[in-house]
Image (tube, rainbow, N blue to C red):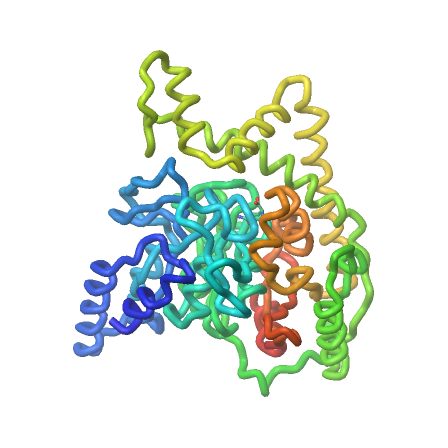
Length: 456
Ligand code: GLN
């Protein structure tokens, strides 16, 4: 009840699209019952959680913050939610995002933007939460929920974690099932985890990771629980940590640079070996992503034709017209733009020049990481180039330009499928959270999160 009340009290920050009162009360009663009968299901039993509104939830509206799915009620649960539910967690609500997770600010939602709780805010202006999982971040940052599930295709979990002072994990591609996550870029999408501490993140990861026979891209491996040692029992003596020079990029703020240097120094003093390394194809990641994203979007969005799912325009002169009007009215400009551009890249005459070329560049970016793991075990980089921008400044840029700056440090991990975690470090002089990112090779979550715990 206290959590539901808080969810209502923080409405002005707009983190929730749907507050799931009835579900929460039912689940909480069942949990209390289990507790009284000493039949608690797991360490998550009875804890409040939130799920981004691009994960299907049975009999609960799943909108993707769009008019297209404004009234869409799925018939099944996405696997990450199903697993949390089976572990006894309580769903407080479905959280706000950029329409279909296309964005980096949680500013492009038909329900309005989500506002950051950090920094100054009034009726006219506020600091953005980052995105596209900004609603999930605020659900946790306000203490309304213990943890929230987001999604991460180019940084959508780590970016809001960075701006809102939270731990944000993008796991190895395929470690957590994508079943029921409405796709953006199938080959890069992963469910992400937002929590206040690394230990909480591990608890959620242990619950929702593992092979899912219903998702052919989920990894075939035995489920392993991660157990982190207490921070005072850990040592990083001899651990090789790389600082990639390409992440010293344009627009990197002095605040973030200082924190990056400080943490590298502390790690070195604690016995780690800090080494400058190079990932030479980093600078192509954003443009390459933009092509691959739009091609996959063009194909993914074809299912929204007004016939099968969601919104249908009032247009019956021809089938073609019905499709066109439904999409014109059902999608915002960002989505429509990506569909059109994606189809352009996929034209027979352009396919080789753009799509195939982008796939080759993606391979080079991925190889950069593969080559580096001979030299170092982890990489330390910024998550975002600055602290959270003001809404009024952010929306002056086009969605494309917003992403280019926001996703610079986060996007390459999705290209390569490797795990990455954003860790809050300290507040800037202006009182805004500054965070750093650790990256590791595929399935290195146990080491990645152990070092994250040491740093936090
Ligand atoms: N900003 C990127 C985009 O708009 C990534 C979003 C995400 O990770 N979902 O595509």
